[in-house]
Image 1 (cartoon, helix red, strand yellow):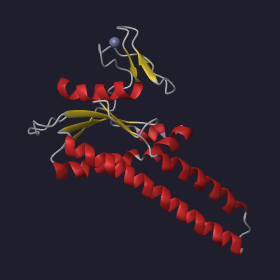
Image 2 (image 1 turned 60 degrees about the vertical axis):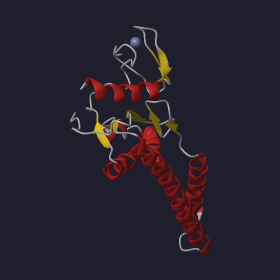
Image 3 (image 1 turned 30 degrees about the vertical axis):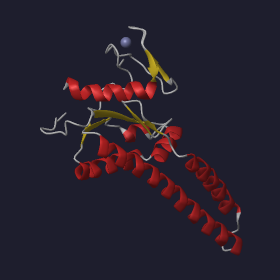
Image 4 (image 1 turned 120 degrees about the horizontal axis):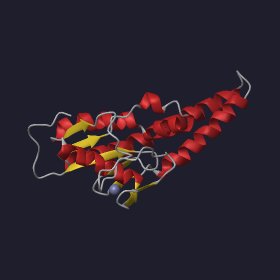
Length: 197
Ligand SMILES: [Zn+2]
């Protein structure tokens, strides 16, 4: 990892875990939830997709349904974009360094349900916004090595578990007994990576 030569000393370093449960978990305990409006907008979108597929091709009813579907797509995209912008602006303005997991997204996309979740969170977009806003606000984005075990490592004692299943919402360390929210543990591990490098 390349450590920046200069960083604003008055702002903290943060690890940020981009997740499924919440949009982003920050190592200081702050988290950004996916907006509620996104979930209902997605439900509506799925319903409209079914409506379109049931309508006869070329019919006026189908054209109407297609228009409604396009509007629903637009709404989902806007809700997502607004939420991402709020989070990435706040982070880049208040942190000096943001450490992110270097996600192997193509590997994760093989899991169908997860792929949906990843798409919803817009991880790519999140990272993209962080990078360009960092240049505006004097922040630095660092990516952890792809093999850094941010999910499997205990942020308290450093012990690494052989396996951490996706369904496990809590990290429980068998070595030191530490129990912590899974995403928060990952975010703290990412923050610690900055100081350990
Ligand atoms: Zn431990």
